[in-house]
Amino acid sequence: MHLIETPISGLVIAETTPFRDARGAFARLFCDKELISAIGERHIVQINHSLTCSVGAVRGMHYQHPPHAEMKMVRCLKGRVWDVAVDLRQGSPTFLQWHAQELTPDKALMLIIPEGCAHGFQVLEVDSELLYLQTAGYTPGSEGGVRYDDPAIGITWPLPVTDLSARDQQHLFINNEFQGLNV
Image (tube, rainbow, N blue to C red; front, top):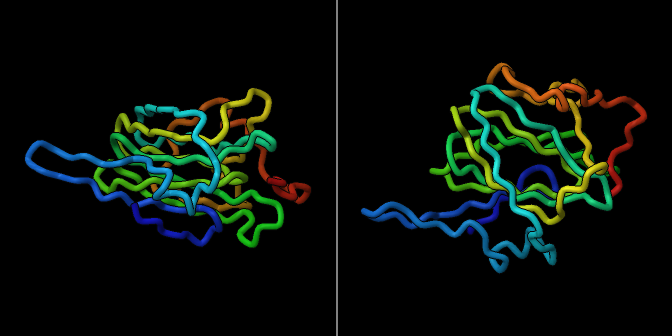
């Protein structure tokens, strides 16, 4: 795996080179030794899978509050998505900045999202599937979110948003009182 830094500290893209032959392909999706510089001493405690059917659908922008904040490692297994992370870390030089990466199975990229960053994605192909590796389990009552269309962040989505959960529609806009997450 080759690690590519982004403008947001701790937000890393892991590039994998699949082995391909006449039978198909094989790729290592996770290797703690190869990812040590990105994940440190963290451990994977939960693996999630999502399927989103409709093009233009957005899931996000989600995070968990400390002490249940998690690092997420996200790969696209099927389809194509516009994967986005927003830096919500208090005192970060890139506070409220976002970075997006198109994820597809063919490109074999994984976005490594540090604690204190919100995560979401937009589906660019029907029936897109993501695999999430997380360093903390889901903790009811600790979840948080910011609006996908918050002008304080200004995410540029590649398609009009056509489907959004009731929960994601209720996230509040960031105001002057929001100082960030203390992670």
